[in-house]
Image 1 (cartoon, rainbow, N blue to C red):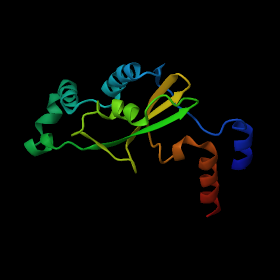
Image 2: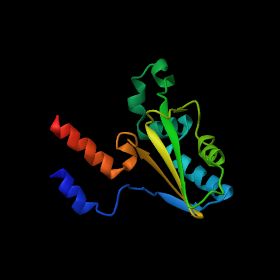
Image 3: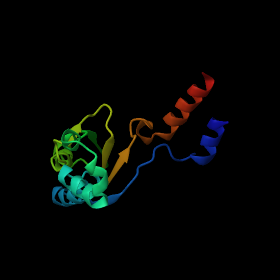
Length: 155
């Protein structure tokens, strides 16, 4: 049933590419876009503390000093891909995002990240989004997701 449904719904699509923002594919434009995206999805610990203080100081009163200092480190990865474009250096694009993320609060983990910054350059346009569970959903490859679901059903 699932395989038949897959053929009907996704006959011509094999992979989803979520896009949150886009810009011209130059290092300057990508750097500007990275600053905005990082500010939105990867706030610095000081900004989160200020936000929590505004939301409710009463909840903070019950915490000890060690609980206030302890910051859970979130894991992130930057996934780069390109199609019909070979002019951009892979590491320069990845560094333009990774270096803007607050490193003490966020740690690079390529194996099992909490958030993944997807950077896709197609011709002369750069498409970017921040997603969760990218590895869990097999990099949004629809056919592999359906195959895994079929395997789980057969077990």
